[in-house]
Length: 235
Image (spheres, rainbow, N blue to C red):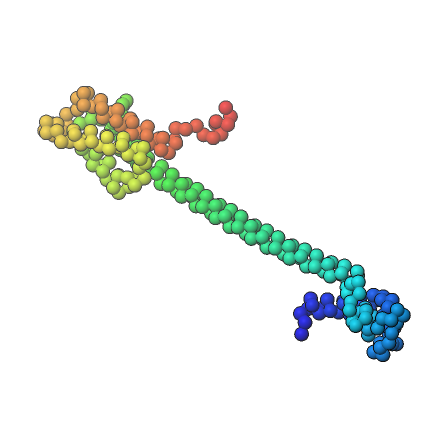
């Protein structure tokens, strides 16, 4: 059984062959009877064949050739169209995938940053209150050995139970620089014997400076002293 395309070609060949005029061929009435035409040639039984069945100028009429070429061009165009459509669909799907993936990643990052900032703001406010005894002006009470001891213990609790995990690298060094200075005072035996005596200015000065540096670092972490977007826009 012929394939579909070969069947169509055979059908076109049969129909078009009958339409091709061979002046030396037998008429339909003389087909199968043999005989000699003028010039001594033996006619064949097919109108599109010469003597002894040899094809004449062309076995395929012009209309048949044009039809075959037209069908081939149409098939090639269809294949190219389908291929282009598949490539375009694949490219579009790829762009959609990466675009969606990027958006999800950005949304998750934004949500994480928002939650982190909210939590950090809360625990930084608690640490800020613990640093009140080191205020430069209008201190609530004199800074004594006992005040320093209570303050450093509260800072330890804050670090391990509340906010240490939210401390940034920028604020890490100022925090432990202050803690070391507080610990040096606690380890001083002379100050320990006079717990309620105010610490002298020579030792108090570095504590106040280190407390100020830590507070400034905390504000930079959360951007609380930056101008608002609306205010910057007005300028």
